[in-house]
Image (cartoon, rainbow, N blue to C red; front, side, top):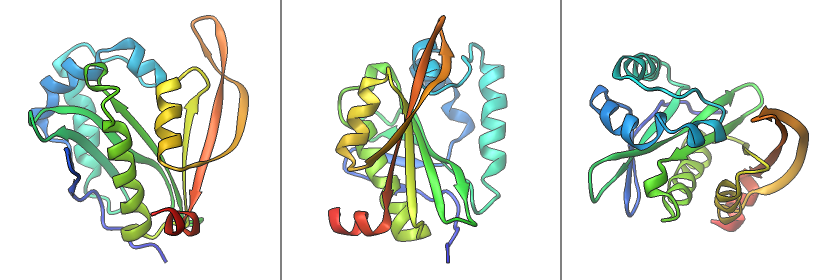
Length: 187
């Protein structure tokens, strides 16, 4: 039985994962939502104005009233800045699984933040919500994301070939997962 309790704050060594706030708008624009490369790697549109970001925040913040909605702003403790986001963007309560998505602004990449945030959300999913399975996907061209997934201990499940059409080319989608039994053995 799943225990849905919504998006609660998670603290790690270097990060605070918390609900989005309207005051995150400037950092979001600066750090990732206006970056075409970052947004395209996880199939999201580019936002170029505060009004567009406000609409996105309306969606995020308005969804927090649902106890099965999980989306965190990734806050770097040292600077207090919102440097990215992480979510269980797909939650299947009937089948007891969820899928993670994340992004970290390019200025903050290659510092282990995505791995740290992902491991914390995995623990939240298994220990608190009690999912049976957590899955994660990435594009075949996204090498940094593949490294995060590997460091978190996911098992490769397969590739959907030519899943995305990007910049005139077809790109595959890689699927990975972790079962609660594997999580208990690894962590």
